[in-house]
Structures are given as C-alpha cells and as structure tokens.
Image (cartoon, rainbow, N blue to C red; front, side, top):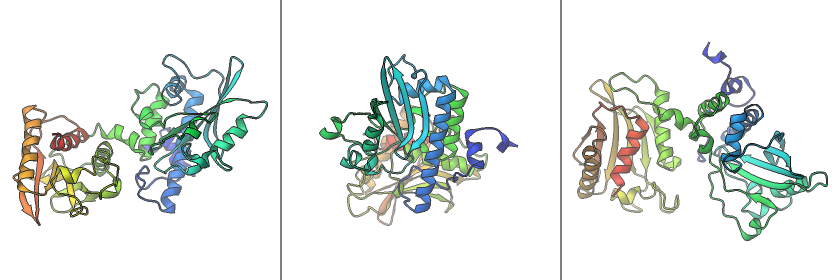
Length: 379
C-alpha cells in the first residue's frame, strides 16, 4: 500500500499530530482550531529537521550555511549537540565547543503564525522577564556554559527591524530566514527530499510550490486531479504575493471548473504590494471598487476540454484595450506560447476581458498564469 511507504509524512499521519485541513501559512484564519494546527505542524516540522540534522551530513552542511549563516566551504560543527524543543523558548537548540569557546544557537520556527512579542528580538518584551531573550541569556550565562549566543527565526514572514537596544544585545541576531532556503535549495540527500515532500503535503506553501511548479493539467484530458489544480492556484497566489484574505478559491460556477477570484484590497493593506496596486493598474480607481473582483485565473470547460484562462476587470474600455495590447505584444511577439484574447465587454460598469491558452505549449501551469498576469501590468 502507498501509505505504508516509510516517510516523515507517513509518521505524521500515524502520530498524535493534527493533519491540517487548510493552508497553514495563511494568517487569515485565527480560530483556535487553526492556531492548534499550526502549532502541531510547527512541532512536527522541527522534529523532522532535528532528525535530519542528527543523521544526515549533507543536510547538516546545507542547514549550517543556508540557515545558521555559516560561511561557504565550512561544515556543521563537529560533535554539536542538537535538541528539539528542550525548553519552551527553543524550537531547536544547537550547542558546540570550538577552540575553547562554547556556542549556543537557538532557532525559532514559524508556519504562518505571527511572532509573539516575547519571541521577537525587535520588541522590548524579548529581553524582559518572560521573554525568550531573557531565558536565553540565563541559560547561556551559567558558569559551566558561558557561551556565545545566536538566535535565528525560520519561516517568519514579518519584517524585523532591530532597535539600537536590540543590536547591542549579547545575542547575535540574524535576519529572518524564509522556508524557501530549504525548499528551493538543490536536494542534497534522500532525507532532504523526504523532508521537502512531506512538508509540501502539510500545506507549507514554500514546499508545496515545488510540486505545483511541475503540474500541467493536460488540455482535453479531463479534470483528473482537483488537488493538482488547487496546488497550482495556491502557488500562483503565493508567487504574486497576493493577500490570501482577498483571494477565493472556487469550484464550479458557469464554465469555470476551478478558479481563484482576486478582489481589490483597501489602501494601506499590504504596504504598496502588487496586490494593492491592482486597482490602479486596471483603472478601477481607489475606494469605489475595493470589494469587487479585480481579476481571476484558473481552469474552465471549453468545448469538452480543460483550458487555462486569466480574466481581468478594468475601469474603462481604453484601459482594457491598453492591457490587452500589452499582453499581446509581450506574449505573442516574444513567442512565449499561443493565446486567445477576447474583446472587452462592459458588465455592470466594468470592462471585462480574458486571456485563454490555445494549447500546444509544454509550459507549466504556475508559470503560464504568472506570466500572463505579470505581463499585463509590466509597463
């Protein structure tokens, strides 16, 4: 049986950990159930990383250089002690000695959940009583240890701005490291590959994107896998850095089989991100159309086959024509792949048009969708 194949994910399925029922690195769902799912997946991910560090030399070297900041050409400290959740304030704790000096490195891992102030080195609570920094110093300053200290945040999405006080701390604070350093690095071992595939199945987007990049749902072959389509649409949302709260995945509805509907976001939602600028790009304006759909992309039924499409809503016929010409020039002149463009039609005061794949291209679905959308707005 397939489920009997030994893997980290197989262990997860048989464990007391909670199987996620939704993407876990979206911060929109703050229900207690979602928070508990995140905590349990974080704990399992940390346990898997700790296992790889203990038993896989190539992965240790990758982790040392990409996550812990070791110089190229250097290796993970020989004889280092690796602990998984030894304290409430440490997801991973690594200790070693070199040339008479002791070192302690703590790694805090996050899957979607925001940092608490006591975990955040840019907040004063970090070094106050009950803060992780204070616990860290108390541990490292014991006479038998007297260690140099380092703290790394893995998978944190917030921007960390260190104050003068935090920079003067005895703790060496590293810039947050994204999950992509482990997900997108060339696979160095069987265990590393197992880690990537298992965390992908646990809906950590940086890892699930790896598999989504390879997906191409064949036109005319029928809708073989809803899960493949779902992974593609989520990967496109992730790559475009769209705000998940304003993105809706929908099965069915007219000719659409599985599509993502992207609404405008109110001003100052995401600090001048691509999503916030959609309204301006499409000529929809600010304030009057925030709750309307700016664009959609996904799979539709077209004469008995499945077709990739991207649809746009524009504020004027002129703006719609400008965007269509831009897409046509960038896609057709550069001969990226064959497409079909519709003429803009006015629907409820909005000019709607779409771009359809004609087929005949081997390009993956994530690349196809993102190429169309980026080219539409790349002036």
